[in-house]
Image (cartoon, rainbow, N blue to C red; front, side, top):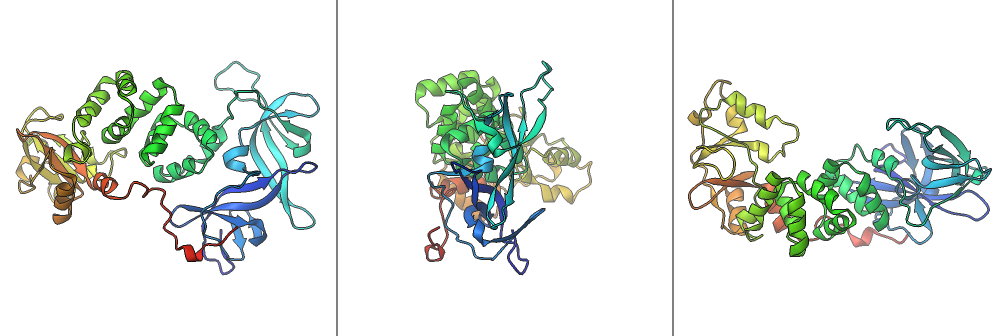
Amino acid sequence: MFDPVGDRLGKVRDVVIVYRSTASPRVIGLVIEIPGRRQVFMSIGRVTSIRSGQVLTTGLINVRRFQPRPGEVRVLAELLGRRVEFSDGTGTAVVEDVAIEPDRRGEWNVGQLFLRRPKTSASPFAKGPTTFAAWNEVQEKRAPGESQSAEQLVASYSELRAADLATTLLDLPQQRMIEVAEELPDGRLADALEEMPEDEQMHILDGLGDERAADILDQMEPDDAADLLAQLPAPRLEQLLELMEPEEAEDVRTLLRYEPDTAGGLMTTDPIILSADATVAEGLALIRRHELHPALAAAVFVTLPPFETPTGRLLGAVHFQRMLRYPPHERLGAIVDEAMEPVSVTASATETARLLASYDLVSLPVVDAAHRLVGVVTIDDVLDYLLPDDWRTHDHADASTEGAR
């Protein structure tokens, strides 16, 4: 979305419509994502042009966070995936896309619907035929207890980063949020849950069956999974741990033994660990993995065997910048930073944050009484702890700039 002089204002995330009894739904506005991942409402009357790939406006934006009113329906969030029945009795279909178009008075309305009929082949890879229909040629149909398909909505979210996906899910109606969560791949949903407040995590977890919930917990970082499970009643906590993969469950059980306001409660249990005889090339190969969190990729930790937490005695760390200064065949034991002081597993979160800040670190090794490496606290772990509970959803806009819709 651009203003009259061509400056980018934000990105269109949805279209808001209202139903009418004798005509197709009328478009009343757009949901716009502006900087700060805030979604706001833009009245369709302030839109001067809609073209391929861009929307032009008068430049006036009401920065109050969008909250749908009764009777308002969001096309992407709520209309896609709905089942409709053809008025001529030829069967049912699912809404996969919606066209909007202006009438002679300049008002925007829902035009054609892009629909997919039920598949006619038993093959799991087959899809039903598609067709177009005007709004007055179909009527919505939903059987009691039938959930709305979220396949198209999930596909539209494919490019979103985890934090943006979490924000988008939280903006959906509660039931729709669960429907979308059920169709998201395990890894994507796990990433999104890690970016949500704990009460919303709990709500989604409660809406999933125990088997699926355990699969999602397996995909989450152990410290995030432990924080979530710690909010559950003991019987369900133990039930989910039993359903998780044994190795993942063991990491979570380890973290649950520590108080949440200690280094042990904040740490993650799977840093990069190598022996002193490993080479710079091996260290760089490990931190190059795309699935690795950037803070965990900042350093390789060198220990005596065993090389899984809890390890043998911690010898030190090698930061990735230091590895870049040495030839690939150099032994890590020869360039280890022995001056980095680890933090005790029982150290307070405040002390851990002070050490990270004092030495400009993004990660800090955590050791037990025997100086064995048991985990790593990263800067994002500490920030999550220090920031207010509602930091993910808190509205920081100046109230003086906000007006009523």
